[in-house]
Length: 582
Image 1 (spheres, one colour):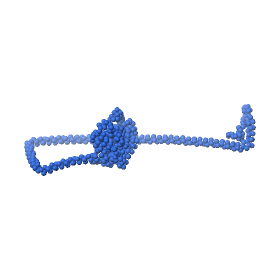
Image 2: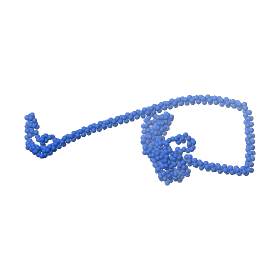
Image 3: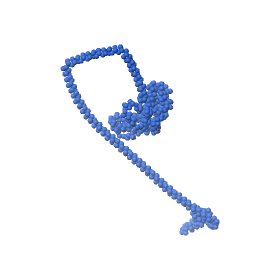
Image 4: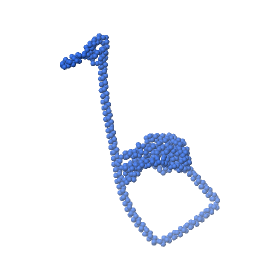
């Protein structure tokens, strides 16, 4: 049992002694020099052999002990434990190797991902570059086409000018020859006439005298004959009382017929005005009348054959507002299809933000007629305002397609009745308006627009079902507006070549984005006016070319004007620009 003497290098078990030291000869070896022997003697000088004796004794006792098998089993278990520990360390090493492999795979995957990302970035850069090249090619083609059109136009103009000069020279020559011939003919005729008059002067005077005497005799005889006939007839009429009675009765019946016809014409005229004519308060309408159909048959036919338009075609709003007004348009169209009652809508916000334009688009999208009236037109009518308001609603109720009644600047007419600024006539007109809009109607839809809705009478607020706020366009909406109006007023006239308008070479898209950035706070109407100003500036130039510097100049002027208007509004207050109502 070698493990009893400490030969086993594993952990010692119970009853096992410490390893025995080797004798000096075995430890040092037999071939050591003489110089090492004193050191070996010093090392084993303190050796105690009693420990070795005790170990041998313990080993003998253990061999004869009944626990020898248990000690052997324990030694085996210790050996197995050591082997398991070695296997565990081997597993840990293998796990570490596997982890290192996983880390290598992860690093390789990360490298591949970075490579793919770099390739994707390069592909995107290549695609952007190709797109840029394509756009540059398109712009070059557009410029070449524009130059070609300009060259053709110039050649045509030169040809037309040459032909016009030739034609003018020919006409002038013909007129000169004709004038000479005419002068010669007139001179000859005058000479011949003067000569004939000189030769026949006595004969002409005798003819004039005889003709005058004959005319005088004829007039005198006519007067005598007429006087005789009138006198005999009047005498016969007076002496015959039956003729007098018949004449008086006939004149009486004639007067009665004229009065009856006049009254009937008045009644029919009022009916036609209420049913077919347009009321005086309505400024603009899409509803067709008989007179308009007879006067413009082609336009009426084109309007009848046209398809319903998109409610937001040509209207630029924010995404949230677009979603809301589109829901209103869909609901209105379905309401008309189902013959249900319409809801009243209030659109409020700064001027020029698209309220009137959307009202027209809403009517056309829904298949309805629209009528536009202004609140400021009611006050000047005085006592006739009540009648005019009733005529509007009577006329609206006769529409077969349904009528969208749009009241612009409604706060000028529908303001609070308790204020002292409103007159009695205007208060009566407001009461008539409230009476006709007390209930929802399936004939007309009421749409109000106002910049100051806080001035509405409380009864008007009670009749509003939907309130929509139209705000000033933001950065993205302004860019869409600038591009739309630039394309409408500048780019299309320049590319078509039919007008005296040309464009210099610069980046149009970049310039539109820059203008949208600079026009913060402007409304859609102000941006439209800016585009029209660009067009007018090109027309006013000598060569008709609109340059980037000219556009910047008009943009700076528009910004200064907008700031001046804003300053005026701050100084005058919210009601400074509105005329006082009577």
